[in-house]
Image (cartoon, rainbow, N blue to C red; front, side, top):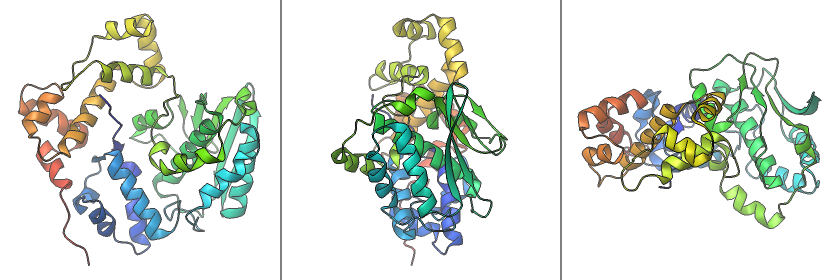
Length: 343
């Protein structure tokens, strides 16, 4: 089964509210992707990657700002592509990150990167001036994820993160950071930062200019999805679970998963805990994401969706789905119906 993660409302709704403050009605954006404006009042709603991509690209177009209006000075469409082109010429990852820091200094106001070292790790810190309208910390999260993904793409391999630091308290959606970063997190730190092994700075850049266009076409999806080169146990377990079922989800036992991965059950349990998750959380997340994907297909009944994700009774599935998203399946499906035209 080929399943992509669904996206938490935190990564969408604040952007729509911020756009509204700049005179762009959220209804206009949501209508363009056939989503009901009622989602603005459902903080636990989740979006498919297709919906998320369509919303963000629409915001880019309407605002002409690749940072969604979250910075004081708009970053006009095409700026990030230029950053990438300039960074690719540097030869190695560390030099590329330094070049990108220079680009940010020239093209943005109040957003600064600094590349330093601490012990065995390189530390790429981010400073966003308080004058920046960093709505719900989403600009911080977006910049950290975007930079990490781009650096790994340049090197052609996943850059393992030792930890990620944030300059705000732990949010209630912290489990979503597993999709973004998949490493230990530290909150209430002086400034946001990515920390990773110093040898990564000397990794050669293996990408060519011809490969840049396909990479950019994947934006923004690639920013909120763990890359295929990520070898973490979360990704490995998720792949085992997705490969184990056909039309209906049938999960193997925890011990069977550990055996397939060539580790003991105790080791696997410890590694998942280090990634701030558990086997049950991964199973529930897959069930939730599959259910959301299937509910987007109007030809499938709620009973068929329930059966496909491992529930024999619709009522049991409805209770579980509501615990995941805050809404029962029928109400959730209604949010995806085409909204009335906004003049």
